[in-house]
Amino acid sequence: MKKRTWLVVVVLSLALALGGQTVDVAYAAKKFVSIASGWVVGVYYPLAGAISNIAHKNLPDIKITVESSGASVANAKLIASGDADMAILQNDIAYYALQGVKPMFDKPVKNIRGITALYQEHCQIQARKDAKIAAVTDLKGKRVCVGPLGSGTEQNALQILEAYGMKFEDFAKVERLTATESADYLKDGRIDAAFYSVGVGAAGLVDTAMTVDCVIVPIDGAPREALMKKYPFFTRAVVPKGAYKGVEQDVPTVAVMAILTAREEMDADTAYRITRVIFENLKDIERAHAKGRELTLETALTGMSIPLHPGAEKFFKEKGILK
Ligand code: GLU
Image 1 (spheres, rainbow, N blue to C red):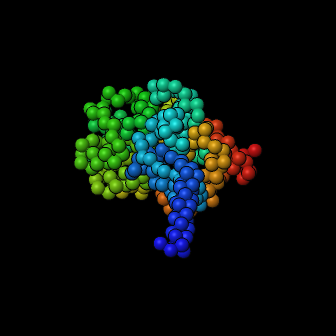
Image 2: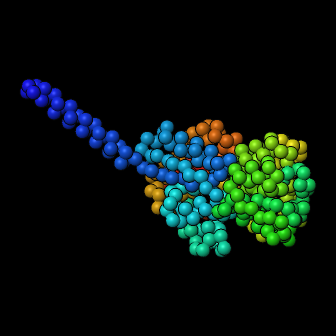
């Protein structure tokens, strides 16, 4: 080969090597953040997806991945073990995690910190119309899904039944199914009713109501008062008429708050930038699910049941939401 050709080859290989290296450096410098979310047919999962997209568009050095899960209880455990950096979960369960309330948690999840409150999640008991369940007490002797394994839903189901003087043993059959499965089981008539603590308008419930005649069973009167007294994270709420096909009037129930959390070990700068970018792109959150509309700067700390992550704290102080 001629001298010049050699030179070209050397320069080209050097450029390639360096180019390749640049890519590797960029990859290595990327920060990977995982969010434990929830049910594919729920609201956590689409919302976490929106957060991941926002980061993708606006924070080139941070890559957020989203995992589906049973949800609240499982997610708090993923934060404890470090298998998730962030998680969406119910504010009641986050508090029980921090305190280490048994039998839900064997030990306190000391490293769980708040980023922001998200939206209200309603306790919704969806039942097939042909099962003739007009009240919680009519669930006796029925086949009932009490929520997925590791869900906040199951804990809420236990608490609601307690307020009515009932137990899982009162059911003819107790199922713990993913939300996708429980929707299918309801449609096929393999179960009569299913508990869900989830944002109104979750795909699983909408879809079931489109396929089979359904009702939402009310939680009201003295049992509801007793429930809120014993478990103060519950607030009075209604599933509004028209929320699902066949729901012709407002249905009284209780609600908790969904919150976004992070591990204490996550560096403050990353937590700060993720918090900020969420609030700078609320339109994208709304587009992911109608429930996203409830997320505002003014209500970001409403129902926050655990200490804030220092990164989120810095952001809310800057915005004057926190003193
Ligand atoms: N709140 C639910 C639970 O922890 C999860 C809801 C969702 O995935 O949107 O049981």
